[in-house]
Image 1 (spheres, rainbow, N blue to C red):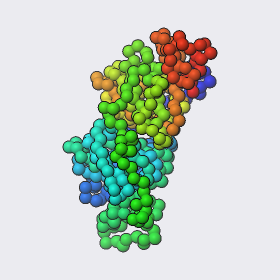
Image 2: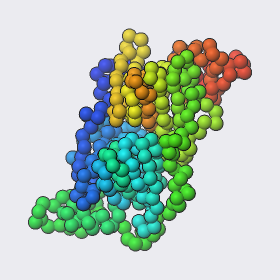
Image 3: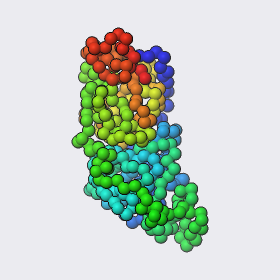
Image 4: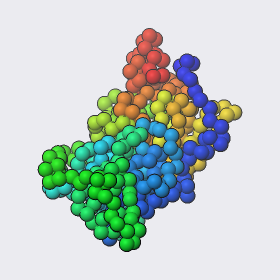
Length: 388
């Protein structure tokens, strides 16, 4: 361990406050201008970390602290649609429940693809997108958005027109204006200007082949039991599958299939019942979204250790510079969507115990922070890659 690493200790109260349990989440049913339109009026928006792109000043945000990205949830019953809109920053969907049909295009030429539980889709900026729950069960989809301030969204002109028929408008500040029954519509100069035909025709078109490189199906994840130094511990039961960007893997040539700058990375972590990651520290903020199973996160070290238990749909915001270990405590594997701030490659600081146990089975980190055979490393190369 690098003794110069600055670690922060969370009080039990502070550690618990970082947990966002399903029961803590507060839905906003009028977060967007299309929320009164038939077929869209039953959708719910949750802003968990950061405001996201909500257009309502009544939206409840669980954690307002900047993370470099926002995390939210869209919950929609079968048949409900989120209508066409444009984002300025990254929008990534992590499907947890339901069958979804995603649409994208320039508002005129559109394409579709379907996704189910465990699938991840990154939609490019500055194109229209929308999605529908086409399954038979209620849908739950986790969204990660780039930036602490996304700048809002642009709605398709047809949606603005339809919303006006329900007395809903968007101000120039991109916030909802609801006119009471019988009231006058706001002055046009106070409202956002709809895109023109030329504006929409000028938007970039992405082919289905191009979008395929931005979709990772659950069955296509590249799992590795040797992606993390902590996974080399006896009985660790720890696997990692890179999803998007430069994330956590310490295995050479283990790359995320979804590339490009998003402002964050995503990895999929799987822990067998009783499995664990080993104790580690990051200098980046990290958000854990429990997709399946039960998880314990143990923060701090020694007598200061605090354990927080999480279940499916729960989310945890881990601060930078805090020691933590993740443990599966249920009867089924725990699967976790791991979102870490920044487009850079993440460098993990492992505890002395993890480093020693890895060396005991013949492995260490090379100076590039990659797992290597210990016997191949000269003494000048040992320990350099342990800390970033």
